[in-house]
Image (tube, rainbow, N blue to C red):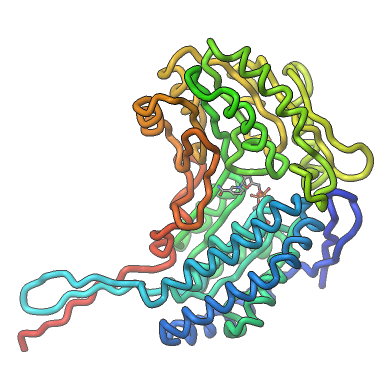
Length: 455
Ligand code: NAD
């Protein structure tokens, strides 16, 4: 029986599209087709594979506006963010289009022969993505996977399949072979789980919640299936008293409220050295109140709505008593899943708003005593994805950066994702790294071959 899912515009609650949800037998057919397509793809000359990926990057680049506006309607992302996201897909494809001719093995000295290594494709890779950044996160999986000679099955999140479907069409238009890259919308427990259980899928590249990630990892263990995980976060933004407090306060809102806080890297715990705490809050308040929340299609908006009513109820639950709202920004009233940027302070360190990933525009501000206290509080979490620290003392910046149990850190800024540098988490924020020069390792198997030359 065919089922469809209505996709809503979260800023207006209007239906944008109806998308067919695939069943397990249809996923099986797609997997079989991918197996054949992968064999042919791996046999294509490296230079030709590279050329096709460059063409795919160009095609995505030409469609930047179309993809960006589709994301505005499907996900409520601001148009400026959505343009960056579509551009990121283009750039990730272009970056990994340099890989096919450069996927080097090694020659290792041995007696009596020649020893060489090859980096073989894994085969069929299942990429499962969440709804918060539908385009970039998909490309961080599919671009290096394709470049390394694999076929890819992409399962978009149920709420946000539209840009993934369009990217699938664009890659076909660019000349990628049929069935090499297939976008398969449907429920996670059906489509995504079939990737986990089907023996012809050799690897899962999963981004999503820590809870689902754990079940994927356990499922992969059955077949010792390769798996990379990019999971949740509760990142700290550590502000020392010697830092540029004005800049730290001015940038703190976008570091947590960007994408309405639905960002695994959101700096949702602001830790401020006690001597600067009150001054920091004074500076933060006008910055939060000035944060422009509104129509995501408006060029000047900095934040749109949350993705769904369900997500809004979850976020709201963290702002209920007994936690204290220090101050809030504003958000439109009426239709759409709006939620105003909210600052909680003072907050007990045991409060769930301080400990759990909220995935909404809510930030907690907590004072710390000294460097050791800051490190201890920042690390007192099962997560370890991202973070920032602000200080003018270079020695301290490096000491604290080395001591933090987190994968992606920035000093005196909040940048975290560049396609040419590695991205991923410590602890329960993930397993493996995406992006950067080493991402191809996660999509290849090393094969060692010894050739006897004595005979
Ligand atoms: P989710 O875990 O609910 O879903 C993620 C994807 O997995 C979706 O496509 C979903 O359909 C699928 N899925 C659900 N159950 C499944 C199952 N049993 N088997 C296979 N697939 C299944 O996450 P979400 O709510 O879409 O996204 C929010 C979460 O993603 C947050 O926790 C956030 O921190 C995390 N995230 C992490 C990163 C990162 O890079 N570390 C990036 C973005 C989002």
